[in-house]
Structure formats: structure tokens, C-alpha cells
Length: 73
Image (cartoon, rainbow, N blue to C red):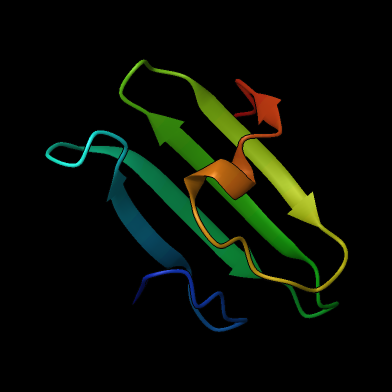
């Protein structure tokens, strides 16, 4: 695992963040495929899960960037 949002082909990046400033209540996992696409899975304190694929070849900057498809996994 790699800390932060530096998505790599050789590891899964992990970011734990806070939506309120005091409680870590968001989780984002992402990975870059060998084809250049970025994939993310995210979850929040409310039990909602999300997934998204970026075909543009750019990493997901944070939780808000990965909340396209709710209950994706």
C-alpha cells in the first residue's frame, strides 16, 4: 500500500481523510492500471460506498473525486 493519492501500477494508494476536520471518516483506495486508467473505491462514515474509473489518466485527488457511483462495491 502507498500512502496518499499517488496511484501507482505497483501498489494501491490509501487515503484516510476527514470531512469534518476532527474525525477520519472517509477512505479512498485507488490504483493505476497498466493501460493508464485510474480506479478508485471509497467509503464514508454513513456506510455509503463509491467507485469510479478515470479514463483520462489522472489520479483521483480526494474522496470527492471518487463519489460518482454510489454503493459501487
